[in-house]
Figure 1 (tube, rainbow, N blue to C red):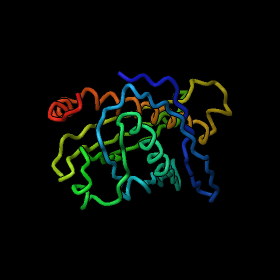
Figure 2: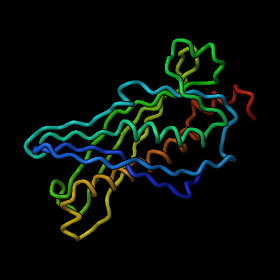
Figure 3: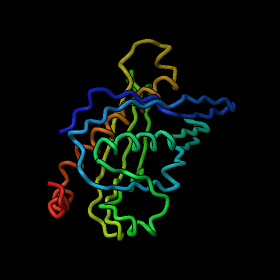
Figure 4: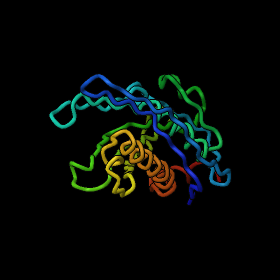
Length: 207
């Protein structure tokens, strides 16, 4: 089982408030890529438009004109995680000719849900983030091997500082960082333990 010795993620996140103010935090990821855990497979990954451009939006009495962009961060996350899992991983832009490229399989991440909770909503001292993905793994001809449902959860430190509790930027950033870290570990664990993947690997000359 792969252990992540260190993981630094500063999420690229934009929040548009009711008064038109916005903020952007640049993304930086640092994930170790242990060679010993890599499977000798020639894999591809396909990112659809929704994943690349995903923006969480909400507009109600409590959360007016929220627009939180996580699309670029998701791509960077998968671009760092997948090379740690496989000896070869290429990004492809078109699924129609994937069969011609002699890949062992194609990974297609799909974001299913993302939720945020603020301290005043839960009467707690933390910000929380939940992210759910469906990780589709299919053969180059489009036949599905499996779909793994992966959930990541993160929360900010249990701080008593009023400034921290009221700082939506800092709290949501920290919680989402932790959720992505959880997603990264769970993707690797899920791929290693998924019965469909194990059955498929048994048919590949990789052992």
